Image (cartoon, rainbow, N blue to C red; front, side, top):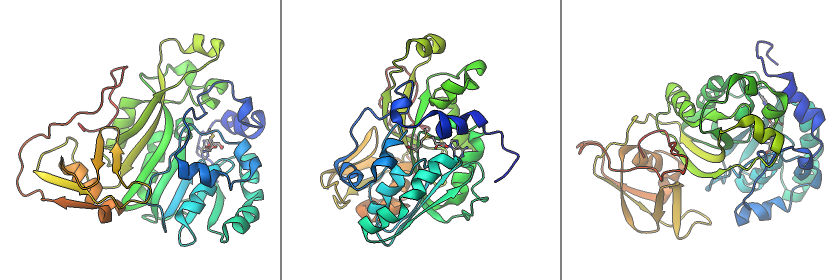
Length: 347
Ligand SMILES: C[S@@+](CC[C@H](N)C(=O)[O-])C[C@H]1O[C@@H](n2cnc3c(N)ncnc32)[C@H](O)[C@@H]1O
C-alpha cells in the first residue's frame, strides 16, 4: 500500500475495531432510512448474515442495466453491495471491492465460497488498498464500466484524488453511481478531524458546491443528483457540535463524457423504449428527468449524451445532433428545501 497518504488511522480503527456491527453506530448517518428497490431486497436475501451485520452504507447505489458489467466498489467494507452486484451483473460480469481495513475485508473474504456456491459462479474479488490510489491495487485505465460506493468518499482526506482516480479507471461513457453524506456548507476544520464525527460520516462530508467544483476539475462538468434525503443525527451531543449544518444522504450519478458546463439546447429529443429490465414504465435519469416509456422528451446536449453515449443507448432513441444551437436549455433542478443545488450543471 502507498505510504504518502494521510488516511486517518482513526477511520481504520473506527471501522476495524470500534464498530462491530451497524448497531454500534452513534448516529443514523451511515444507515439507510429507505427500503432498497425490490430486486435489491431479493438479492440481499442471498447475502450472508455476517456480511449484512457489518453494513454501514447510507444508500442503495445500484443503477439498472448491470448484466455483464465490470463494477468497482470503493470502500466495499464487509462486501454487502459487492455480493448484491455479483448477482445483478451475472456470471458474465465481475465485481471488485476495494477497502483499506483488515477486519472489514476479513469478513468479506470469509464468505466468498458461500456466495459462489449460492450463486453458482464466482465473479467477485476483494483487494486491500486505498481508494486514492487505485493503480496500487491494479485497476488499469479505462477498465471499469461502473464505479459504485456507499458512504465512503466522505471519509477520504484527499477527495479530488479519489475522483481523479475514478475518472481514470472508468472507460469512456462509464458511470459513477454513489451514495454519500453531503453538507449544505463547509464543515469547520475542528470537526473534520474529530474521530467520531469523521467515523460517523459527518466530519468529512463534502459541501455540495465543492463537490461540483471537484468534479468539474477532474473533467466532469455535469453531475446529477438521483435522490436526496435529509439526515437525522439523533444524538444530542453530536447535534450540539454540528450546529446549523444540514447533512443529507444523496445518490449521485456521473458519466465519463466531455460535457458542457451548462445545459445547452440543440433541439434534441429522447424517447425511452421502456426496455430497461425492471423499468417498463419510466426511467429516472435523475431527480428531475423522468422519461416515460414511448414519450418523446426535449433534452439538452448533455442529457442527450448521457443517454446516447453510455450503456443506456440501447434503451433510447435520441434524435438530433449538435449542428444547430438554440441557446441555453430551459431546465432547472428540483429545488431542495435548503436552497443548495442538487446537480453540477444547470439541469
Ligand atoms: C461507512 S463504511 C461503508 C462500507 C460499505 N460501503 C458498506 O456500505 O457497508 C466505510 C468503509 O470505507 C473504508 N474506507 C474509508 N476510507 C478509505 C480509504 N481512503 N481507502 C479505502 N477504504 C476506505 C473503511 O474501511 C470502511 O470499510
